[in-house]
Length: 160
Ligand code: GDP
Ligand code: MG
Image 1 (cartoon, protein in one colour):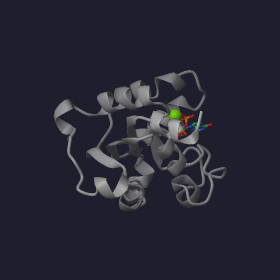
Image 2 (image 1 turned 180 degrees about the horizontal axis):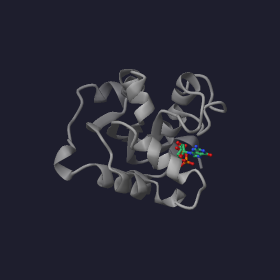
Image 3 (image 1 turned 90 degrees about the vertical axis):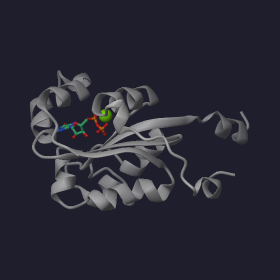
Image 4 (image 1 turned 135 degrees about the vertical axis):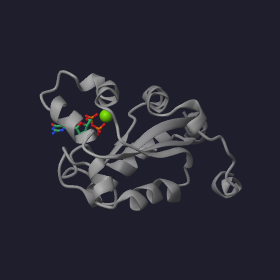
């Protein structure tokens, strides 16, 4: 494929981004939101939320069998989280890049985890790992009426 054809194949996607309780407690909410805002993605949902245990278990159900699962559920439910839905071309993979590696010690400087965290068990932010999971997680964390479709005025300045 020619590069411009590959670029044209990347579609508008949705991703679920969540600032975990350590990010909220450490006062990193503004810092983290601004990284996605500055990149040029569109915020379509945002709320501060105390997550019930059942929801955390459903969200992380693929990790159920891992030894750290109970600790992960305790961590995610230990205080309020900030739930966000973001939309954009290629937003799922791009957000994962902005977030950085799962273990913050392996995350590149310039990424959220690379700049702001030191431990896997306190890695400040979640991002969906596929467009399918983006849709699944947004539906899990948000009610339909909590999401906003809107047209940012900056759009012509971001996309040719
Ligand atoms: P992510 O997609 O980069 O968030 O990573 P995973 O989907 O593999 O894991 C989900 C979350 O579980 C991570 O972000 C960590 O908060 C937590 N986690 C993953 N692996 C470990 C681990 O080995 N120990 C602990 N304590 N937590 C972990
Ligand atoms: Mg994951």
